[in-house]
Image (cartoon, rainbow over all chains, first blue to last red; front, top):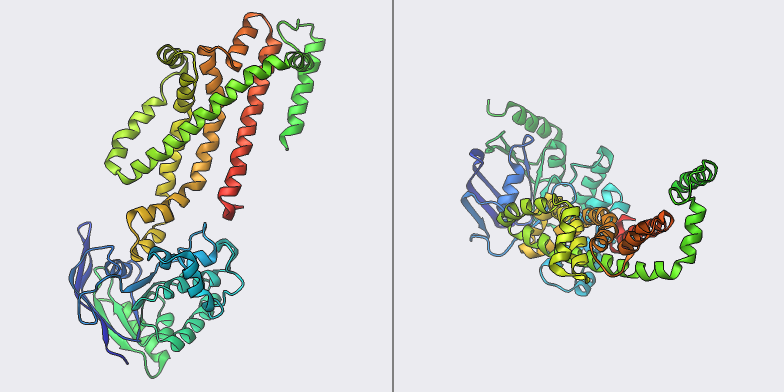
Length: 236
Length: 241
């Protein structure tokens, strides 16, 4: 496992007078896939909003040992957030376009990657013409091509049916083993977290703090049960 | 297209009633008489239709540009929105009957008062549609763009503006159905030529057939403009086909 990359310490957020995050601490190493599991509405998405700079918080965030400069994260929001008015290829290049890269260059740069994401031949399709799984892969491709230090995935498969979701998880695991992207995944699906991650943080209900940290090794079924018990017991 | 049989039936019933009831054509002309008289007067009708088309199109273009510019301003300056929107709502409560003669009094018999009156009537629905359209933007898409480091202006151009397009075209279609009527009313209140003047003269000469011929032209104009907005929408929003 690589060196420590993201180091979050004692992160607290209050929204509208209510504490959402309570001294939350977590770390992600380079090349590591870490999941954050928690009950619905626990504040998992809030953590991402803090990391991407959309929300202020107290506490300390360090990236490679220093406060993050620029935007080190590529963010994949809940659902796919594809723009219906852009063709698939123009959705995928969105991040590069925002960075000021010309459309032609952005397209050239991502062209070889469509096959890997199972999207070759669909570049000119509108999002509504794609299946749920394809939309998610396009959204993931849009995240990856930004070439950031770390991926933030906010319940990427939440809107998919169970079968498509399982297929996507398997596909993502393969992709991830090939590329060793560093990723932080937010989910409330225990099996998804166990399938994809190296490590799992289990959060409490609001205000969210870390209840337990699990390394994904050994008997995965037992691990799943353990995690579920931790989630169900909560603060008790 | 489904409306066609209904229209034909109404015209036929009207024709029969006008012919069989014995009501004189000076009171209720039959559709056939309207058509014949319109054809006989086609040159005068056409000469009076052109200024109306001009006033409608210029007024509507002016109104659209104004609504767009103001909507952008109000999207970036929220406090201004709260201050100005009530003023625009008030502008919609002014009765055209009272305002039209005043605008003619202030701006004369030329094109200016017509443009202003068409704009007054059509401006607000488009402004409101645009503002609501901007606010309909998916929060996830905005969060995504912000995470990519997009400025407020970029978020507007890449997300808020395209999100507003379907709303804008709805507003455009509502507005355009008022535009021709507003132009005719403006002419009615004071003009040298135009369908409004034609209607006024026909009425004063006890020619309901010619009044109705002008009404028919007005409806045809509105329907054409309505169809045009659909065509433009198809070109501007190819993903929604």
